[in-house]
Amino acid sequence: MQKLLVAAACTAVITGAHADGGNYAIDPTHTFVTFEIAHFGTSTNRVRFDKKEGMVRFDRKAKGGRVEITIDMASVNSGVSPFDSHLRSKDLLDVAQFPTAKFVGDKFGFAGDQVTEVAGTLTLMGKTHPVTLKASRFNCYLNPIFKREVCGGDFETVIQRSQWGVNYGLPAMAPDNVRLLVQVEAVKQ
Amino acid sequence: MRQHRGMKLSALLLALAAASAGAQPATYVLDPAHSFVHFEVLHFGTSTTRGRFGPIAGVVTLDRAAGRGEVGLRIPTAGVDTGLPFFNARLREADLLASAEYPEAYFVARNFRFEGQALAEVRGEFTWRGVSQPLSLFARRFACRIDAGTEVCGGDFEGEILRSEFGITFGLPLVADRVRLVVQVEGRRL
Image (cartoon, rainbow over all chains, first blue to last red; front, side, top):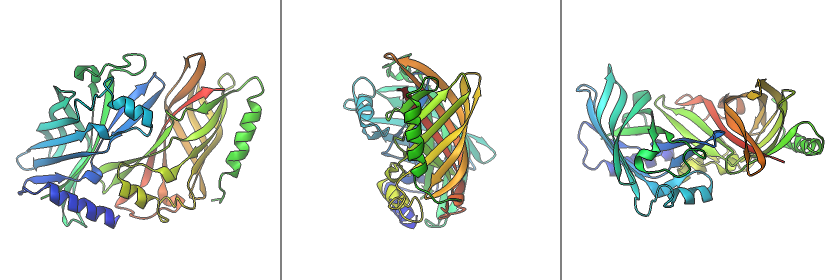
């Protein structure tokens, strides 16, 4: 665990080179996007994107902020290689043409000093549409290894993949609704 | 707690294979493309760390008319995938998954609860790092369909364990004791 945290700290410092008081660097070891989509109405496929980078600017007093997270779409990981290849293909995410997706959130909702939601836009397959991530959990703590404040939580939303042109398998094999689960932690710079 | 490593599972698989020759209960073999266990554990009270085991392997018998069933699953914990190679390696060490000695976990259950034709709960025994404890998996979704002439049944199941009960105490309490297991499973009828 200690090695893990040290590695995370190094990454965070590199990412946060232009830090000031309100800036947090995404901890890539505790930041992941996972999507869930039903398979023939029977079970739920869970698929994770392994590579991402980003920053958060966040002010609890002013109740505002901005988050930018870029996802490396080729890092899609379902645990099933043929499925990953199909996800990367033109049928689905077409990662050759659209190698990254990006979430930009600039409207933070608060209840007291707790973040309750982050609204912004998701750019995927070259199309940009509004998305609101709801916090199911949010917390800040003093990380004993970094000796810095870390803020983070669990966020989720449901998107309609057809909005971004991902139509393969609709509607029988897999529905339009895709649930996004986002784990995020960011280290104060 | 009892120490054992899969012998019970082998016996069950043999029994299931023998039973499938008979008429009533239908036997299903797990589809490796749609059978995984994800774990979720709360990190510093802040965010949820997830990891994946699988594909899991196993056989299920269902007698939906009689409201009975049996299941035996092998969960390859040595192949844990969190998306972070160094974290996977750390998890495999002796004080966590202890993968060298215990490369697989097992779930064996004979207590199935149905609500109508739908499977609602599977109660059995989870064996992890050589320690067996009771575990209930609750169905969040269950359905059967016909796929190219073959019946496929499956769903989503969830259960919770306390990792300390299996001897995994590293990082407590900053990393939570409670671990949520989220199970995707689909089985193709033999």
